[in-house]
Length: 169
Image 1 (cartoon, rainbow, N blue to C red):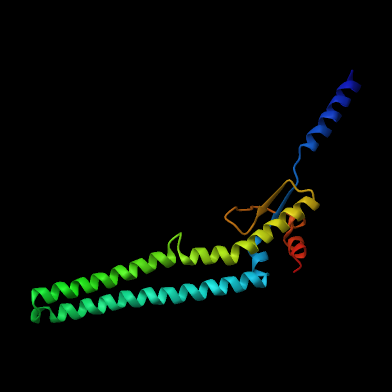
Image 2: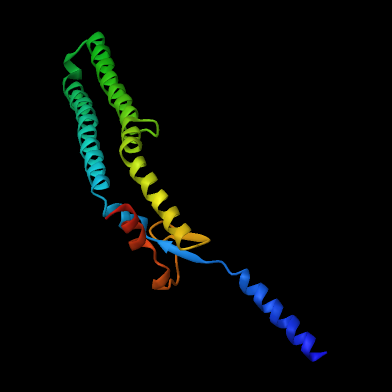
């Protein structure tokens, strides 16, 4: 009887250990920073962003300068001239807002450029992560670089270097 119970417990222990899942983690930010194409894409996006920010800021500054000039000269102007200048100021502000939306909105040119330049690199990294996870027979891979927090991670589960090798870096 005790022999059967021990055998049953042993069999149950083996089946429970079969339920264990293999985990790994990766630091995608470290991987992306090691890829020259990603660095070039980030530099291009930063360059465009600064150029467009300057363009929009210049238009807003022009509108502010026109408003200051109107405020200083309004005593000397006729109501028609004031209305004309006010319309010009509003037109300049509207142009600035329109360009701001065209460049920086979620459907804007900066977002599209980021998708065009960064998405292929991210897809390449995701494919390499899947391949390494498959080779190492991992059930789950967590990203240490994202908002997922890892309280403890055994270094033997870090597959960042394996992914870099898979990518050829």
